[in-house]
Image 1 (spheres, rainbow, N blue to C red):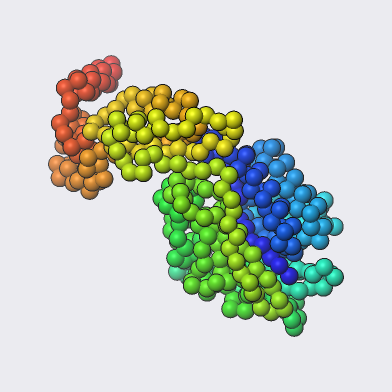
Image 2: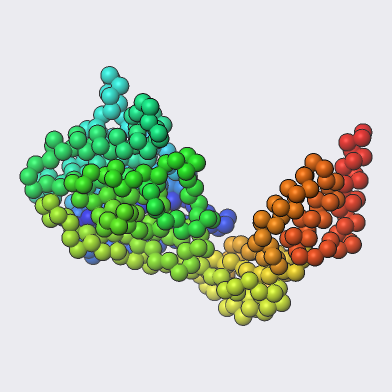
Length: 415
């Protein structure tokens, strides 16, 4: 049985206000081809199918068109989908009645029985071979919200201990079903301890203020593979090859400029996994950083002039991050850059400006705290901040404008 693990598609996402429909379509076309060429038997999608809890009709259509095409090229393909924190669990599950007779399983909600106990049966999916024989069991656990996991009395961290207990309970339930020659694999959408995030501008933030990191020990040692979602950088956890994030299939930030996006494919043979490989996802739209390091504005504009002219495929134009080193305020910066780029085959995503000593945030804090903020006049605060950011005194013209604003504010307050 060949299994493909992917996650964090974020269909419907925009990148610095640019629509990403083309990129998602290219990835899904590639995935359909990969399923057919690799003869994948089971597709695992570990959460964040959509970027918004209320996705557009176009996003929903794209997703279900993919499911149709995947089943078309591999009629016996089994697909297991769990909800992530970006998904609406109930909305993702809404077509469930139409899919009950198919090999597509969507798990978004942690259902409970009439007596309030968790219905673990709904979270455990049998994985069958072409002959219909159960070869493995999948613990299909969606993103767990407050109320989904048990409350552990008098514990240090209710979230981490509650989530760990939830996974333990699901494992105990499925282990009773497991027979000789069968395996158990697990899906999850969560933040594990020591997981490496791509960068500070990655769109995923810690959900509960940093207390939600789950230990790899939460997954029972007998689980043969843990297919994780939520962190956008592909990686193994706890130095264990079988506990993995597949990562997002398309870039989520410029920190991923040289990053290889991927899906994970492996074979499940009775109670063992083998041939585990990372399959690189082709990049349909490049990320471009010009220049590679922060440079003077004149040098930046010259570098931008060298970029190629617009092509016939605007949807393939690279996303551009411009890095510029400024000596002081430059009100017309964006206009100057946009003017140079007007006929270039790029899409301006962001401008990253730096100033001399602008990284010294401690210096700014020290300047303000030493004099006690409440004892300083607005002009003093402004002067100190300007000095620390631009490494020079406030120009007379800017000082005059600031004084004019403060005078107007004072007159308004007096009225």
